[in-house]
Length: 259
Image (cartoon, rainbow, N blue to C red; front, side):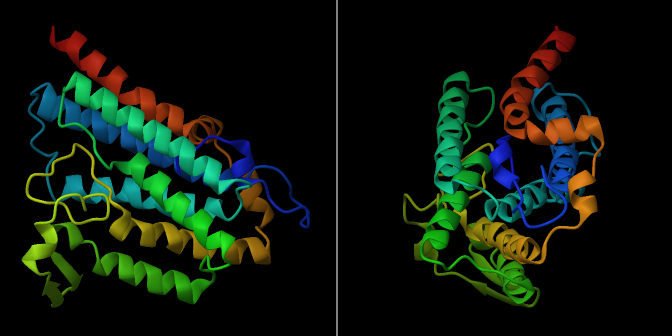
């Protein structure tokens, strides 16, 4: 999702087209810009106190999902092309730890525990382990099953699973256990400014991995390599850096405008 490593999606040398898959950079760049705008609206309303009444559910929730789901799906696609998913997982984990430390010390908003970068680290680590044993899912059927499972588990952190009328309440004991927030079962005392646990989000990541494996085997079309709008592709290539610096920049701008 947010890594800028060029080794991440270098294609096999069997096709006519070679180089970076521009479509991944382009889509990720669009999502990064959307993320920055989302956080700008969030900070203006909830931290700077500006009156943005339109920035509320369901628009806020749909907007947030459109960013994070795309990030994780694209990251899953790209994990099938990475030369070293273990290294990527550890890099993400280091950034996630740094974000937790900084947001805890600064305390501008609720500290971030198990946020999107943690999720990227955990999902990439699982993908690496599955690759090692030859069990990484592949193909459209696997992707569909994983996506349905993802949707069914979206309410996990709220104590429910299922889709539509077929929803079940989980035993209350599951959400009363401390220390399971990383998995997707937060206790009543848990809080985070950004929360993306391993479940259900691992499933949308593996959905991307399943489709990425299929596309890799079949060969990406030439337009997937050439897809480009330079500013967005640049942002997409440096998505992790943008993620790290954009909130301090936005908060600083809000402070200056409000002072």
